[in-house]
Image (cartoon, rainbow, N blue to C red):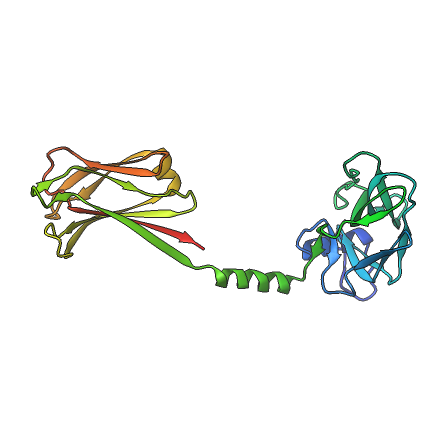
Length: 281
């Protein structure tokens, strides 16, 4: 028991130790084609053979190089569905290029054990195909797994982050009936809920005669879309004098409406409600 020197002259490092480090440096991706090295195992088919260009594969940190021109033969004996696979067997310390097929309408289930733990066998698919007794069909839409360099992943994440911007929209309602000069104590606003959005409810005193003046803000409240959709929320805001408190109830419904009401007969109720929705796009 004690220290094991790994990156030292004359050190003896086990394949398991080296593989564990590679696995973690590769972003903990169990198996994948290493992006950007060689020809990334591009392939073609001809005369019942599937032929690969060169590339590197890492399976739980254990790396393999597949030489250009490596190929497998697909026998057109019947209707089957299959993968071209790389198989690692730690019990026999072997790595092979072969196929796995099934006669059912679904593709075969591959053995993929955790080689960083107690597993010994992992089958990694690098091509997907189907066949009949007369034809071989390569699935060109098959999404193979790649292990990307850390810098490429970081650059991609930064690009996506730079493309994201904060958007907003709003709806408002007046609580003052200009025709009758009557103060209302409730309002219903139509909001298209999104659980991923944040909503800011602003209570303010507006010009009841329609000149658009904003006198003062009596309170602002943040809600998530989920809160507005499922809950009935009670809170308090300041009255128009900014000296007293008024009880407010806010509830959402499945049709996207938000109902806001105050204590009936309360004085100093703000005359304008605005709901701002903020979302990322």
